[in-house]
Image 1 (cartoon, protein in one colour):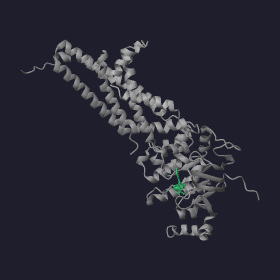
Image 2 (spheres, helix red, strand yellow; image 1 turned 90 degrees about the vertical axis):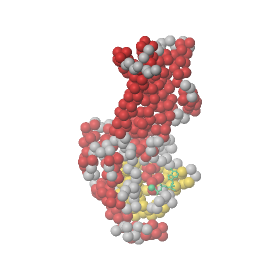
Image 3 (cartoon, helix red, strand yellow; image 1 turned 60 degrees about the vertical axis):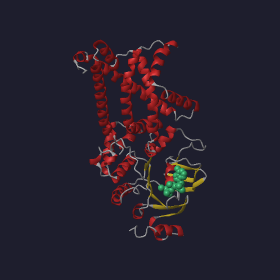
Image 4 (cartoon, protein in one colour; image 1 turned 45 degrees about the vertical axis):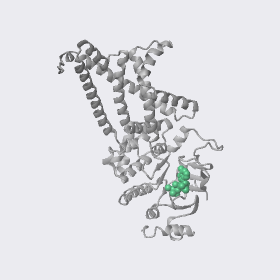
Length: 221
Length: 258
Ligand SMILES: Nc1ncnc2c1ncn2[C@@H]1O[C@H](COP(=O)(O)OP(=O)(O)O)[C@@H](O)[C@H]1O
Ligand SMILES: [Mg+2]
């Protein structure tokens, strides 16, 4: 028995797949952006002198890092309405979940980034008379972002792959669309092969583009 | 004869790291326009003293005044100033570090303009003009768009000097600014400092470059174990050291000094 490949039905739905891919990219990018804000706040918060705040933030990070993300997605999507939070549509709910998830990981990235900044840069910033928040804004954060850029790039790629889990709550990203196409056309191999190639190419493209960005900003050598 | 008010006055400054007292009562007056060289063996407290002046270290006893203004604390009481007030005081004191400490993500010009714009509140064009003038003066007009990693140690240190002096501080602190440099790059930095000294800038210079100290300093202090052991004009101090310690210290530079 040989499998007869026929990609025609897939290519007829290719625009849908691309739309799904695009949606996944958006979900990942938005979650990364929100996750960066959360991660930064948590990283700074964990340097706070207020012990209960530090404990709360450690708890957040540990809970998220030790929970399967699919469970978090279900918890937010099905669980929160039980608690009376109805205003989230599917996509908002997923972005919220992925952002909170990314925030926990990114907080660790930023935390080590912040501690790896040589004190002498901060002292130079003090010596020219920058105030504390200016030292963060103009020296610490920009240097930290450059140090953590490779880790941020990896996180973006992971998040992009994680967007396939949105299929579980019927968000029409690439994996969900592919399942539909598969169901409608019965072209099992063709649909999943095409989807895999799309994921692969996109991940490579992101990695390649970000490596260029990294090189552009790699000023500490 | 009444001395004019000194630009820098340190009164009985003590500093401890844990239980170890590394400054054991520093008293010194520096007049405007003076170039005070601080010499002494490693670990004698030279760096720590400079860092106390611009509050990179807190000292627990004594007082430092710059242009009559008490550094770090409200006059009279021993209440620490707020961060903004401390930052404002630091802005009037320049510091050049042994390891340059240029901001690695900024070009030479941006390193210089940052303080001019964010601390002094100057317009960008004005700041750029000032920065270019200073980079030109330290011989780096061509390198203003280079990042620190694209510059040699000597060039980085000259940018760092431009960054400090472009803000027209009342006083500039130099902490062994040539010690991290390859020998062939030392002279270009010393030449810049000599130029600044001639222009009447008030400078505190920690240095092991004895020929530079001899040529440029108006006064030399010799630090020993957290105290000022000896001071005087360089010619006198170098020719007739009073203490064994200074004689021994200078002996180590013999042959290097000329
Ligand atoms: N951050 C610090 N913590 C503990 N001890 C320090 C610290 N900085 C300097 N010291 C000690 O203080 C003494 C004076 O150091 P320093 O001022 O750097 O001397 P110098 O610049 O004359 O070589 C040394 O014994 C040094 O080990
Ligand atoms: Mg030192």
